[in-house]
Length: 124
Image (cartoon, rainbow, N blue to C red; front, top):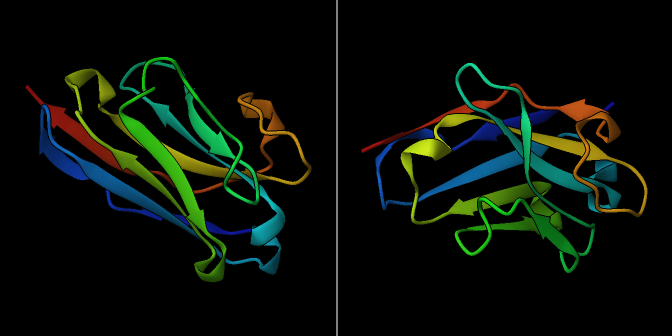
């Protein structure tokens, strides 16, 4: 069982930055694929970014490429999402998720473990 706890959300003006953190409870964190997803108000959950255990293989949604960066610190059991040049359309609840295996994927159904989410609100 993996427990994930997100932090770092908040209210920011358009053009600003935030860094989200997600800390995992399990020792298996270092070998897990980690992902960030988000759910805008009134919409379905969508993929944001993911990376492999080494942090070298990353994938991003087109909407965040060049603005968001996913990274991890296995010594701290933590994955990060650095969000720059934020836009009002980035407003959402952000979730981190974990899966075992080797493939870095974007499908929600492939992730077995989820955090509770953290709210990010970008004002115009």
